[in-house]
Length: 130
Image 1 (cartoon, one colour):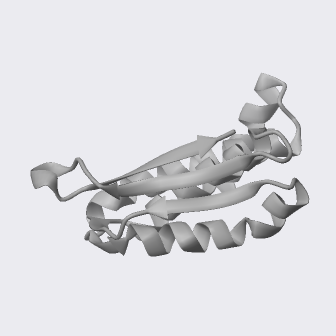
Image 2 (cartoon, one colour; image 1 turned 90 degrees about the horizontal axis):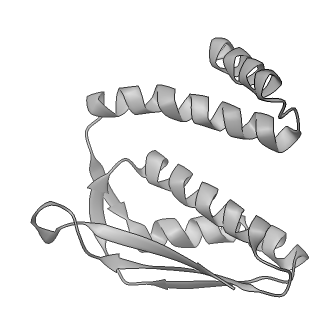
C-alpha cells in the first residue's frame, strides 16, 4: 500500500496536480489497479443493486444538502453476480463527481435495473444530473 501511495504522489508531482483532489484521485486509481488484479481470484457473489445504490446515496446526503442538491433513486430490483466492493467504489466515484459538478440547487438521480450481461442476467446504472 505504501508503494502505491508513493507512486500516486510521484505521479501527482510530475503532472503538477498537487491539490488534495488530484492526490486522492491518483491514490484511488492506483488502489483500483491493484484491486483489479485480485478480482479474478475472488468469486462473484449476489449483489442487490438497489440496496447498494440506496446505501451509497445515504452516504452523500450531507454533501448534497450542503449544495442544495436533490438526490433521487429510480432503480428497479435486480440482483447481479459481481464484486460488491468494486460496484460500490464505482457508484461512490460517480455520485461524488455528480454532486461536485452539478450546479447548486440541481438534481442527481441514479437510475438502474435489469439489462445487459451474459444471458440477460446483468444490471445497469445511469446517472442523471441537472
